[in-house]
Image (tube, rainbow, N blue to C red; front, side):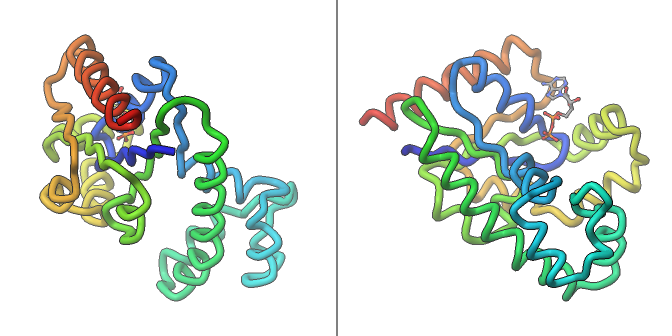
Length: 200
Ligand code: ADP
């Protein structure tokens, strides 16, 4: 299967762009959705998390106690590594399974940390970056999530820089001051490109 990795910083417009591909019939594989599913009740990561961290990290419904885990990994870098050692291989396996089962000439895998997490780049045929200025990211996330400016800046500081992301791109959508119709037209053009690359 021909695989397009879609990424961008928080608030860049990844989800918006991904949805525009989806309405053109492209199958989306979303690694955030998978990460959430494997730690939901009966999620395949949960027995491993219980064994590694203890039953106190499992909520009454069998899902991950997210607040408890968040506060642990926030102050303990090794705990974050132990958690990721469980979740990353499972997310990778589930992503590959969904890619294999996908219909259509190509699939888009949405990976928020594609550039940050080394090995992803080798597992996709193309890298589509949704880019915008940091000021626009801040304004959108304040508007969408009600976060403070400092909270958004702290998240951006933990992500790759625009430069690092753009260096990894095979295609870029500069989603800045972009009317929706224009964004749709750019997605339509990318879709044609990916169709021809996938078939060629
Ligand atoms: P991401 O998934 O990268 O965090 P989203 O797609 O959720 O970003 O977009 C962040 C916010 O900005 C959303 O509220 C979205 O509706 C808005 N947004 C995205 N692109 C545009 C645009 N071109 N014009 C206006 N608002 C936009």
